[in-house]
Image 1 (tube, rainbow, N blue to C red):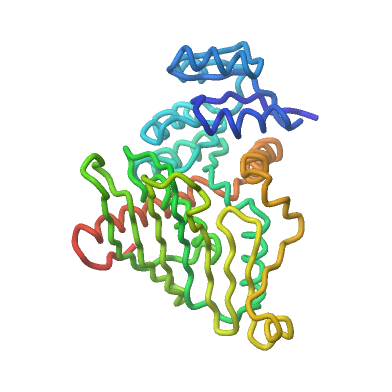
Image 2: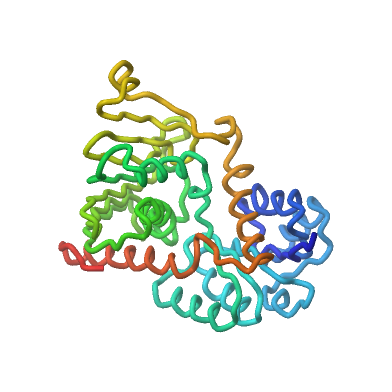
Length: 337
């Protein structure tokens, strides 16, 4: 089996807990290099994972002919510059979400990847969870009738405060609703953004109202609970209401709560929990499920010359909605997308 020679650029938490272990455990990849601007961190990760080729400058990784693809886990503010260097150098790139700080940066990156004919994938790992795939199938089959309302809500204890919760975390929620409705165009956006406390320059809470072209009204709610200590106190879910029922699923999986008007099960039990096929134990962490599956998908795209399901082109739409939301908050009006 041919393997993809991969470098990981940015050796922070997500690289250490998810991407590096998953690359080392899949036969589709060979981890050949690590890169980080912090020399102590770089040496620590090299020793921990047995990687001897270490770089402190990503440009040197681009020049390394032994590297075919890069997993980019740098801070969000460095995503666009780092990824563009790789795609300009003819190397495939997997970029943690979001693709860039702005729509224009992301557009330049997508165009560069198309010109170089390399794969560009964005890390929206929740779309690889069995519960979301199952709910999407149920909606497509009309099991809850015609959807008219969709909500993605998440409370978090961690965000990258330098970019704000809308760009850092809200992009997950916007993207998954886009995917649920097969990329149906979002026509209008209205937003309320709020910052708790005086020490942050960017928003810590965001609520968006979305109007889909198919008539669905959407809501995205992202909230940073900076003073909370327990993840058990957070609510994270996707809810879809239809004309004949509704479905709610945990954002991080694995359970689904279903109500179908007219079904015997719903008549007897009301809303009831189901588990999708191939769902793993709920205590198996995302790092070993969703992150593993998205990396394997990226490697398959490289090996089989397929287009990634979470492509850079798709993330352009997500970033356009983010910018429309910011404009809406500034003007106090709905903004056309």
